[in-house]
Amino acid sequence: MGLWMVWEVTGIASAGEDVRDTEGAVKAFDLPMEHIRAHAGLSAFRQQMLVESAREMRRQMLTEGRAAVRDGLPWCAALGDVTVMLQPRK
Image (cartoon, rainbow, N blue to C red; front, side, top):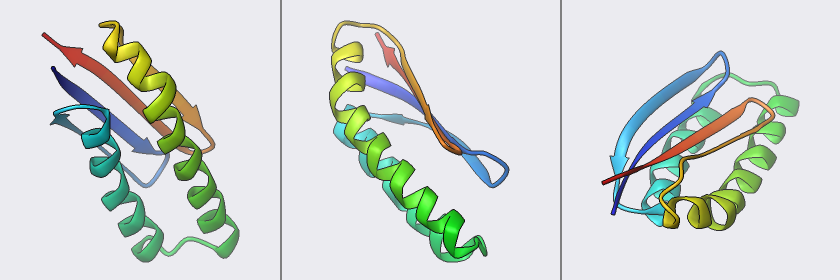
């Protein structure tokens, strides 16, 4: 099963892409989060908030997100400035 994934960091960046599964979604999520943290010129406080939101988002993607898409349902979560949506592809 494939997934369509959309992520956003409010006011900074967003993207969408096809991924194979929730593990692939987490990998696709991690690289831009690190890039944003390193290159977006965020304050130390906002960087820390991004790190914490991204960490919790990964956990939710691999638990609640995985369960939802396994059942064929879309899943979306927002934490701080970070939003992720997973949509199963038939």
